[in-house]
Every structure is written in structure tokens, then in C-alpha cells.
Amino acid sequence: TLALKVTHAVAGILSLAAIVAGITKLSPILNPNAHKIMVDDFERSFQPIWPYISSSADRLRCFVGAAEILLGLGSLKKITRLASYLGMVVLFSGATWTHIKLNDGHWKPAVSFLAASLFCSIQVVRNKKQNKIPNNNDTKE
Image (cartoon, rainbow, N blue to C red):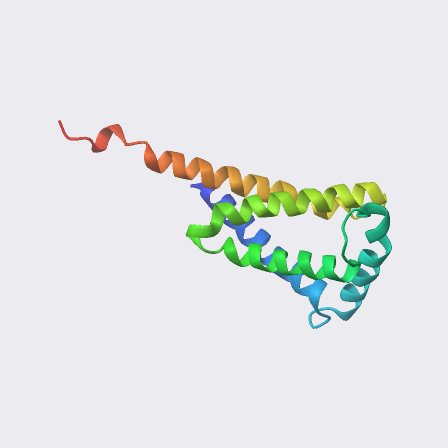
């Protein structure tokens, strides 16, 4: 169906985008300029936005990047899919909140990631519920 195709497209794009975003936060291998911007952004925003975290901006950036990669990869396996999407909801909620607080204009991609992860989470739950409901035509009398 069309809904299933849309779900697969959104899920695939979300997974790939999360993995690429994570790699970009961790390494300049894909895009050195984007990596530098992310390093600078975490350094600039860390203290005013996250003063209660007793770590460094660099560690937070590495944690977020690793989480994005792991969640993106986890969403590719059926057994970890829902947990990965829910983890993305939490991660991208934090990203959205951070960028809104910074008023830096980067909240739009974060909201897009958040909306996609919410959509995928809902679709996984819907699919699980539909698979548990027996089809009336399949029952034997």
C-alpha cells in the first residue's frame, strides 16, 4: 500500500540521516566543514544550555554522535526498531529544545528528525497492533 511505501521511505531516510549526522559529529571524514561547524556549535552552546552536565562539550558531541549512529543502525533491525525510534524521539527532542533555546535557526532540521522519528514510532506500534488482531476471514468455523 501507499502508506507502507511512505513509511519505508521515511524510515530509510531517517536511518541514513541519523547515521550521517552521527558520523559528521564524530569525524571530518564525510564533510570536514560540517564537522568543524558541529564542533564549534557544541562548544558555543554547551555551557549556556547544559550547565548541569558535569562533562565537556566534546564528550557531549561524541555521545550524541555515537547515539545517532547506534539508533540509526538499530532502526534497521526489526527487533530493535521501536526502541531505536523512541530513542531518536528523546534525542531529537533534546536537539530541538537546544536549538530553540540558542535561537540559531538550526531547529528546523531537528524538528524534521523529531517528526520523522515520531511518525516511525507510531507506524511500528500500529503495525504490531494490526498483526496481533486476527483477520475474521482467516478463522475456521
